[in-house]
Amino acid sequence: MKKLINKPEDFVRETMEGIIAAYGDKVRLLDNDYRILLSSYGAREGKVGIVTAGGSGHLPVFLGYVGQGLLDGCTVGNVFASPAASKMADMIRACDRGSGVLVLFGNYGGDKMNFELACETVELEDDIKTKMVLVKDDVASAPKEEAQRRRGVAGMVYAFKVAGAKAENGGSLEEVAEAAQHALDNIRTMGAALSSCTVPQVGEPTFSIAEDEIEIGMGIHGEPGLEVRKMMTADEVAETLLGKIMADMPLEAGDEVSVMVNGLGATPLEEQLILYRRVHQLLKERGISIYMPHIGEYATSMEMAGVSLTVMKLDGELKGLLGQVAKSPFYTNYNK
Image 1: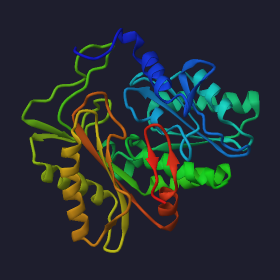
Image 2: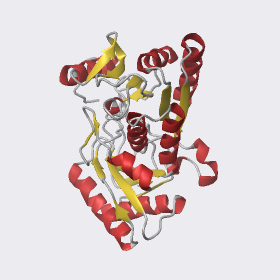
Image 3: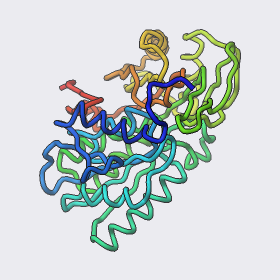
Image 4: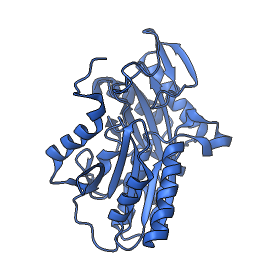
């Protein structure tokens, strides 16, 4: 294993220390607890809080979306591991401003179990009202008729953005949760991996894939994909991923979407742009327009090479919320 780290067991703490050293004017730790990151943006009293949680190793998800018009707090566990329920409860308490807290996170067993316990705890002990919305955008992880089993991947970034804007606009807890769910109902993601990644405390690749192969549908923790193929061109990858998404969420001429081409950690921006170029061509040919494309690293898997493609179908409400200004150390939107 060759990584720019010190001790593997210090990976999460030193990452958090680096974030605070670089962006301490924008985010802070809760009582110097390096597992819990809070926004330093002065949100008004009465605003609905929005929080998330998950394992480390996915920056900018999850920590990178704590900020104005996005998340109010995030707690992280070890690499690819859920944080403790007690940490989640502490974070919810810190982000409640009297109107309740939306818990918005990916559909993974450990996160779900711990967040359910955390929500029960704060409701019983602190009378804090919570609502839970799970991100289930990965079309490769379950067929359409079993969509409730799907994993949450890069599409959660759009959900953070929409929910954060709704909360900034004064939405109630129910309204913010409904906006997040409305966004997720119109979001689909499909990924492809070219190489594995290495968890620092494990010290060896999570899975193996041959130099001349690509895995379609691979999960961000190394979960098996749909199939392994011989290496494809960027255009072929774009056509395959978009085809899978549109089979699950049909689009028609006149529709408007936002598209995210997301690097998984080791894919150059040039390659992402080449893939986006083909996605743009394919959608334009079908009479579908793109608003606010996102190209870059938004949800990674350590140093995994590969990409994911996310499509969010827009309506007037979603377009307005997506375009609203948001600011964090890792995501800034000056669209308006």
